Image 1: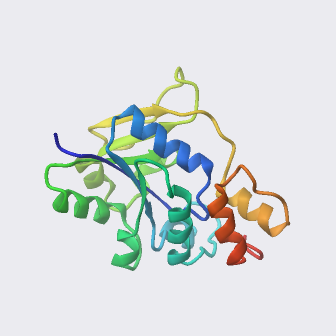
Image 2: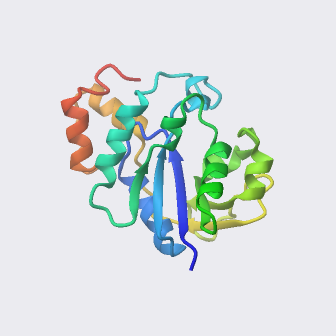
Image 3: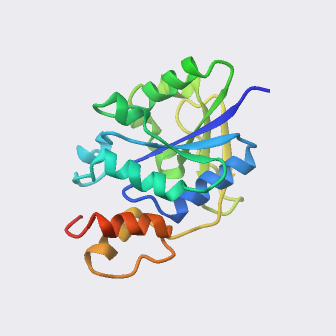
Amino acid sequence: MPLRIGLFGGTFDPPHLAHLVVATHVRHALALDEVVLMVANDPYQKTRGDTGPARNVTPADVRLDLVKAAVDGVDGLRAGDDEIRRGGVTYTIDTVEKWRLEMGDAEIFLVIGEDAARSFNTWHRYEELARISNLVVVNRSAPSVDKVVPAGATRCEHVTIPSMDISSSDIRRRVREGQSIDFLVRRPVRNVIETQHLYMDHQ
């Protein structure tokens, strides 16, 4: 049987428990062999301000360390550094093409959230990406709510996960204001944040 691999890309600044819930629920729902949390090198829509105010992003190698800490010991999840090693602006289409070429018969599933699915037509070469991808949209709403289908999608699965009101921006704010982030991130992630003094003046 060919491998079934999920690619779950993101800034992960920092990775939190909701990211892990997404990855594990998708893995089990679609019987994937593994889900790779792919760390974006330069998430241009955030650094350029395409999807909100432009902001500084923690260096990619540090975010990779955070993701490695987040998935440590979690069966079927691992951190991906392909986009960091490639360098430059991160385009998902380049990552998917590379994995399809290198993995041969493996089935590649691209995991995105509802917000990303709604704005999919703003992604670089989105029509081509939709054509070559098995898209997986993670739905945090009730199953009865209309499901979002990304523009141009020909193959699209939906996975509903428990609603969790956790965000990386809130965690950065909590760290900056000296509040607890216990049970929002795994302890190894918190340890990296504390030892490297991350987010102390971060927006």
